[in-house]
Length: 465
Image (cartoon, rainbow, N blue to C red; front, side, top):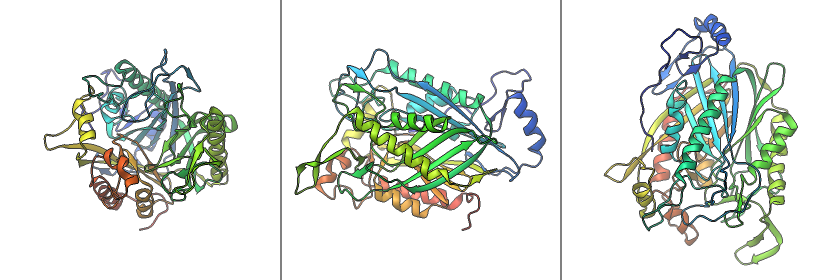
């Protein structure tokens, strides 16, 4: 549900080196450097995006972070339904931002330790970052089930389950993090790698072995080799603790960040992937079987288990990216399209029409969502506006054009589960994910739009059709 706002413009009419150039924000030093290279740049406009420029332009990267933990603590949400009170916190909820710039192309990526972050709130963040083109700001959530509701789910009694002041505060802090990243920009190189994450990390609760073991890692380095940022892209529900233990927490993402930052420096950021239906944390106690016929186990729902899984993810991520070759001057391209989805679910339509956030919608029971494609070096990224089932993730990765293909789940919006029409209400096990999906055609429309984006966009570095 994207909301349009005016095109970005420079607020201060006085001559100033902190100016907007295309979708790019520059410091004085960077403006002087970029001015010398501008004559060599070739910019290709593609709808709302900007294309990659000539190969001799360097990549610049900046990072920013803010703590968004509410004080005092608020109830936490694990999805539609009542929130649960909290009595303590484990770790801090954060907003983490990376800003990427090459020539006239600028892209902002923001990750929030929240269950989900609707586009109506995302647009409030974008409004506070006037130096960057709206469509080039990708805002995702980690999907922790131990954070306050940012959907403002209607409670069926005229109220809702959210705290509007907290949501406003998150928008302010997320924008501050991204603006900080823009201000901190510096020349950078990349290492990008994909590999199977080993160890007891994730599994499919519905069918244990049907999940994507691949983890994609992007690491930004200074020319001297110092780590600026490490981005981990992997499919998993951060729900070790859940929402009924009385704990507010980033769940396993907190230990993931801490371990990576202890080992490498820089900032760690997590972008979820196609984790719907139901790729979850593997906190099973394997010798405590709950249902031997159906294959269900008791779970270890402790902070120690968050430390174990998050730490294992961090070690695997660093192992995967550790031997990757350095990409000295990686290309950068960003493009977006709007997709229209019919809302067939009565439960989801009630959220759209009754939430005090005033979600945008049409009288024909449809909503619009922005989808992004990003080429970064030899990698390609697509955004998912919700929780795509793993078979959708496998299929679209096979059709993407990167040496490394990343899916940013719950990004630009978070509209429940995304199924193909053959999965929709196909088994009793899929009843919940079907009811909390927009409808039967959501997956089909999304795949069609993705394939169109991939087909009509430039190839990542070094790739051939």
